[in-house]
Image (cartoon, rainbow, N blue to C red; front, side, top):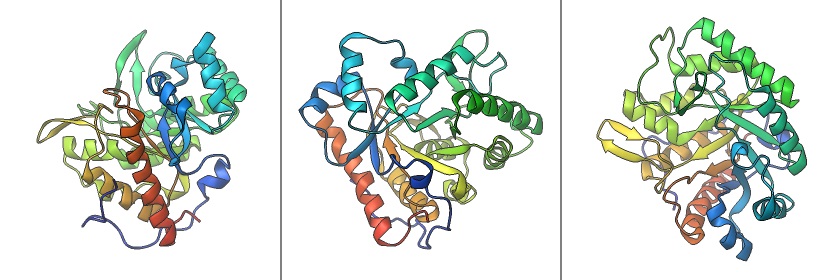
Length: 302
């Protein structure tokens, strides 16, 4: 369940901003990653805390048969977010416009209101199977923003870009990560998909203050949030596995996020070591509980 407000949590109300509800009227509340392993249990009954689901389009495009029918059954009843894994917005090879076209058709078919991708690169004439940091330079800002604008043009809508977790620093950094993210958002005129766990992971791996990072994120650009668990290899090294329960410091950082930026739609990611739905439901309920508490306190994105 959600941890109580800790010493790093903020008490002042969030500043006024364009609400995520107005950006995506169908999307609000707490969500869960849609996994094939969970479908039988979800058919028996979706826990009441789950307002929406998220999926990776690469795992569902061109799929037929039983799984396609199952997906249709749920997309007819619940909003879905499309969260990409392989577009490689910071990569050096041309964007996969065929993939983007398939994603656009897929989103239209299932009435999905939001597409997000990582602010990273994961390909170089082939997929690298990891998310790697983009050099934080002025040249990279313009390069990545142009690829985001191209993606938005091809999709016919704004996208959200997600702050990624890293284990090695980019080889060239003219600015820190919050400055780089803000510059890309402004140049591309896109949304921000804020991953709370990734901020915590990077703060441990690279020794920065996660609350200061959060304060520097632009409220008016935030459209969506992620929560997840991770694996701590050493005191100073965390691996973002999405394979464990969310820990208390990350719950506290979510409280801080809601206090600073409002209660945007928030999804629980669980990609490995997937437990029964009954074990995941309390974590989704904890997100919903935190949102309700902040709404009661008046900390909603206006």
